[in-house]
Length: 319
Image (cartoon, rainbow, N blue to C red; front, side, top):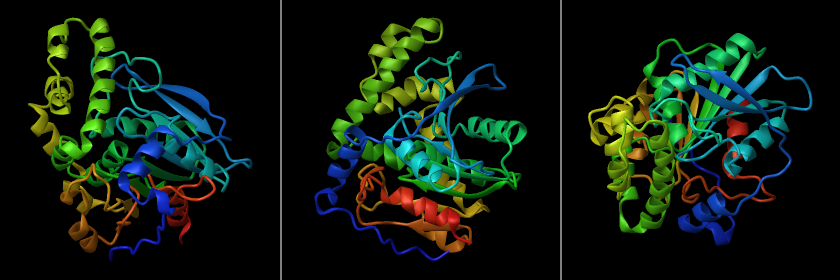
């Protein structure tokens, strides 16, 4: 489809990507959403925790929401999405990836950017156990990459999935990883790495034969983490094999479900290849919107509602 001209006009103080990213990640709060937790069992013996919220009226429409790296179902961008959809006649289920719900998952493996089998398990659970005729999916960052990969690598997407939205998506994982290791993103990289290492230390206690304390202590960068843990725990040769095989860029040309990607041009986490312009122009189901502002998952709006939330609802409601 033709590239969409964005209508996003941020408040003056949030035009800088750093400001919108940091404020949205550390200071935004969202109230008014009551979530109910459900645990589902996965085929490999592990589990996922799903946090549900509901429209005031009974609905046959559900939005599935996927978080980013080291996120969870209670992050403001997740709850903000649930709130706007609940207010407009949709139920919402915010997915906690493995180990992200406050309780360690059972296996040594965890979640990663290409673990589409877990999204498939959620979709199958909903279709087999719930009464929804229309499903929609919205993914943020890592969750957005996972969503696009899921849509493009399969020929048998359930017909109930009508539309999807992906926000701040690192479509090219290698390029995005390189950006995160630049000086401008040093503080973000340190924060991400520390969160990941802290969780890996807990996992090491549960699985001492899988990784040693010495190996964990040797992790100094996100590259190291992906080499030492992400790749090895999930069947990849090394970090670059993981990046290559899990990047959604190679799959977006095969997407058949109408899908909107919203990637801000001032998102410091994204490399040039994270903006699939050529692929969008050649795929009638792929819509690419590239606002000048927004940072990474930081599309600050007015009255507490973010632009990506309003835009997702608008796109999904379009006939």
